Image (cartoon, rainbow, N blue to C red; front, side):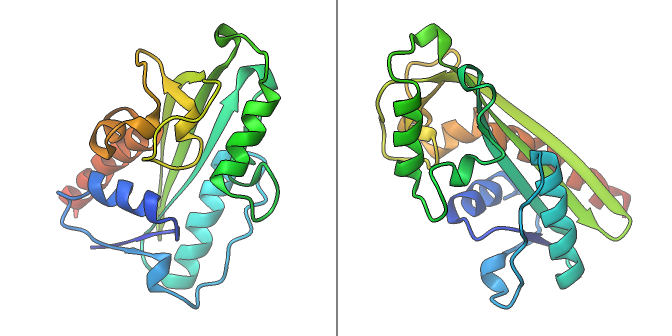
Length: 198
């Protein structure tokens, strides 16, 4: 069975491939399809964007498609940046730009009010197939970037129960607890059940 990951993000591709390494799936990504049209992510929720990406990429490729949308929701900022997490500091911004904006917005805010959570919504879409899994990871935003692994907001996010950031963890340790790791694990179980049923 082929599975197409609706992303060019090499970090996401590696995380998802690692989680599905025992599935015997041939895993492809948008890098394998240079002519694939870009999906405009204009949904108001992570769920809408994840569904839209999976459906449109499947309709163009004919291959079972897995798409995710992930956001960071900060309590003090009323759930921002949420669905805009990737481009919060403006079109074409870098991960570092987004992190700088976050640290500036939370300047002077005490640690106990810097509560945040990552949320990942994954959609698996094919003909007569629609499966959704969700993973969440709670934690806090710290006052400065730490660590060089990971991506996105990982260097400024400390998960609950830990005293290091996601960017200071190995990818194996991160995948065990991360929002995407949890959502992928649930989706991997769904895919295995589907393969058994075939």
